Length: 289
Length: 265
Image 1 (cartoon, rainbow over the protein chains, first blue to last red):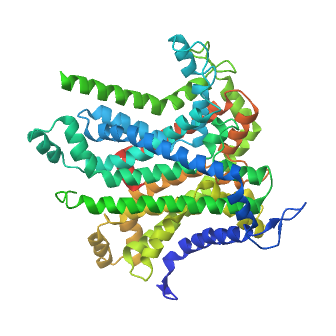
Image 2 (image 1 turned 135 degrees about the horizontal axis):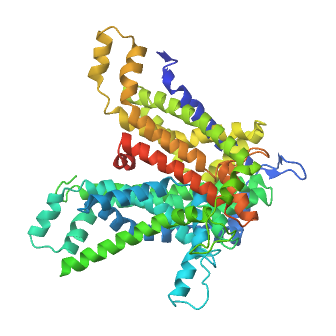
């Protein structure tokens, strides 16, 4: 059953992973070269020039910083809206409300990014539904610019990340036994106190892992800024794409991607570290879940 | 009184969220039946002219065939690789098992654009110029974590006593696997299959780096169309894809139940 001590069933996975890591090895190698003038291809000298260029370029660093700040903002709003949403899905006494919300979340989370960006273009454009409604209600006198700026990208990205967050914490809220909440209520705590002192603290690890998921999706955003940013909003993924398709500089794109990957993995490790602390802290609190 | 206020607030919040989640899809569907080229609401008149235009457009036809081929290659390939991996991890003891676990999940952490650039560098060195080949390999890697997770989650629930019973009754290991084990893995395979299919059809960030001149997929053609034209053709494409997704969700709900979905991803 085994060839050379390794289970043969792992062969397909090994081939795929070898291609994946092989791609990263080639890509890391290319990031130390320079584009060959005129022809597609690369040439020496072998060195860190591309990395130095990224780290000393105020535009590139600015885009990286903006991407991180933007992703943090999306993460915070996803938590603030996604948690109550998951709470309704887990605790609503009406089956219809629960399945309607769950169905809408699943459907949203399975629909493609280009489709959704397009939907937001229709809704948020100068002559879109939202502007028509605002004008009709007399809230504004002229159409508000909702797309081709940060607002549009933010709304579309939030719409994309919200289902991931809500579905992550939904399972965790459901696993909090209803009796624990009832016990708190019987002991005199109000509904809000019970929510903030019992339900939320128990689900902190799920909140952190949901936040990590949202953050990593938000810093990788590519299609939304491309379509809804109108060239004004550029996140790091768009910067890398431009290096390749506008400047035709694969080595510099590879170096920028490497720096981006390091930042992304580092922040993700930070989230996992927090999640570890939260999980360890939670157990002495009555040994729940 | 206070419960009434809080109940009203919760309901209002839930309704707002529902509208927020569904609005882009609903208005896209509405726009696809428009008579006019530009969107206005409420719409003046309805027609199927953009559907006729969509099915007659050569670039969308080609992209639909390309995307379909890609899905036909990647979905079974990825599920087969996931079945092998999940079986090895669930049933066999070997050194480096935990390493295998975390290796499989690694494509999930890497941003799409970075994966795209990495595969582009690899295929340039290998002189692989065919878009379909490049995308098939990249999509198999990107989708493997979803498929393995879905199938692995299902392995814990497989009843090993029935497998042994089949063996005692004279079935060989392969027959026992095909007749007894595999049917029990159906929910995991279906969940994994839905994720892989949806990812392959919708992926933009990785595939945009790997297409060749005649191998655009649907999202890439849609992006180019939105950039260059202003008409509801992409609304038609979105509507058709949403209908496909809805059908998959309903099928999934029938067979396994939607609540399981959030657990396997």
